[in-house]
Length: 110
Length: 123
Image 1: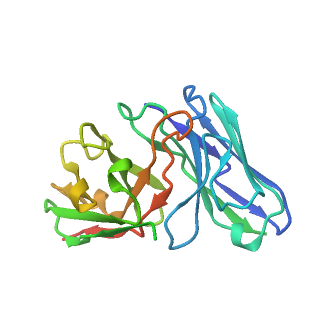
Image 2: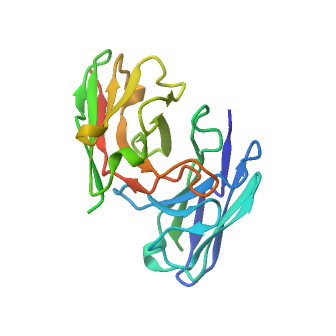
């Protein structure tokens, strides 16, 4: 089965910082990679789809890149509301194969 | 507005059953693939099941295969998940979410999520 490895698992940063989170797939998934933000007690929200497309309404400080097996989520100029947990997700083999989430990256205030 | 509302969660004994529902509003339900995802307390997201537009195709995580059944009623704008033979490992917040598609432009992105319904399996 496809494995998604996210790193780091946690990250401390300050308001205004630039942070990068990476997601690595065990096999090539083309651009079938999506990123979500989850705040405490809330449902996840889609940030980036197709590896680099910004979901409507998401601030432009969020960006995604990558293809094949290696992907990154970058947040420029961190804002207080960005401190949350971030997940990558692949659905390359759907419907015949499973959807897989990364284990998550918890972004905390330094 | 566009929303998904889950219901049906609760406390159930090991070996018991539950039926979760997800009611859609504000969009054409039959145009979207639907997925169930769960999140155990303090843990990450785990995909549970998927169903295609007309229910012609379903898929399940290995952890629930043979015990859970996904279904949908497009006339009622509703998605369901039947949970049988429940164990403590099934304790989680269960979310439903929609996806516009699985092409290289949509990539199975889950663009709308419900607020979740909690399932607790305990004696």
